[in-house]
Amino acid sequence: MKHWFKRNQLYLLLLVFAIAAGIGAYYYINHALENRVPPVGVNDKEEDHLSDMANSPSKNEEEQPKEDDSMRCPLDGQAVSSISQDRPLAVMIGNSPAARPVYGVADADLVYEALVEGGITRLLAVYYHGQSARIGSIRSARPYFITLAQDTGAVYVHVGESPQAETFFKEYGIDHLNEMPITRGFWRVNDRVPPHNLFSSTENMHQLAKDFNMNDKTEVSGFMFEKEVPAASEDLRKSEEIIIYYPEKYSQVKYVYQEDTDDYLRYMGGKAYIDGSKNSQLRAKNIIIQYVNTKVIDGEGRLAMAVMGEGKILVFKNGIAYEGKWSKSGLEEPTKYNDINGEEMKFPPGQIWIQIVPGDTRIDY
Ligand SMILES: [Zn+2]
Image (cartoon, rainbow, N blue to C red; front, side, top):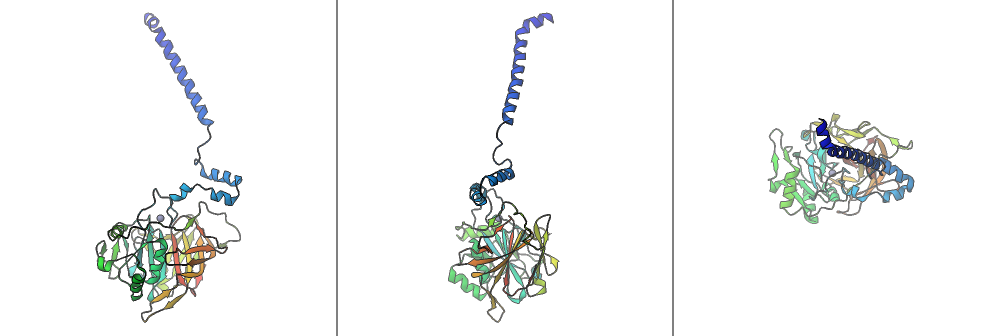
């Protein structure tokens, strides 16, 4: 043993040296790391707070990093890994009691609801980053829905159309996918009575848009979204229940604010309003009630709605009610939704429901 030790004395000494050097290096690096300035973005809230103190609020807004916004969906403000290169789809969805539950609406980026003849409503569900394997039931076109679809530059999807819509398509050269001549990419289910049984998927409709060379336009302007919930002020009008009195009882819409999720559960005709694809109740993050001049234009009771021009809005977000104004100056000009000071409305990220209502509609809130 003693003999072995003598022979390996030099190696042992080197080993002890190496261990000591290793421990020293470990502590040195650790210490250096602790004193390093934390990387930007580790704590965004604190960073924002610090820059708030350093700059005036308006200046700070201008200096928000741009790359953050470019990775948000312009229609619902959701963070996305990439911006879709496909053109949005705006799908005409039936909403009479026989057409419920609707399918795929929970996955839409943006939803419009407006009256058609007979006191019932239809939905126009817009899909940009949103995807759904089953959307419908798909119904026929009306000019004011086609006009609303131009706000997002979407390809309008429908089956059949009113005589007024037929004229509108031709007059304005609208890109649209009509199941009536196309059929492929659409399917009918047999557990529902026609005309409430036609469906398609975002995948099929995007493919059709490509096949018919309609997928070229991709610039989507969308809405402005808030990064943080603005501080509540006592001046603001809280509103936790909103009732929209569309003319028939089964068409009346109610939204009830949910404080824990900061959104609104949707009801229709006194019942929870379900998305059949998920078998769960639909929720809106934001609700815009858009008042438009409406008139009956034919013996069938078809309506004309002035969705171009300007008018009043009521906006519901974060449990608060706001008044404002909408304006749309041209077919391809997106509708502007402004607050009472004329500034563009900002929304918390999430689905927006735009409720188009005739000017004399009673709204409780
Ligand atoms: Zn989206």
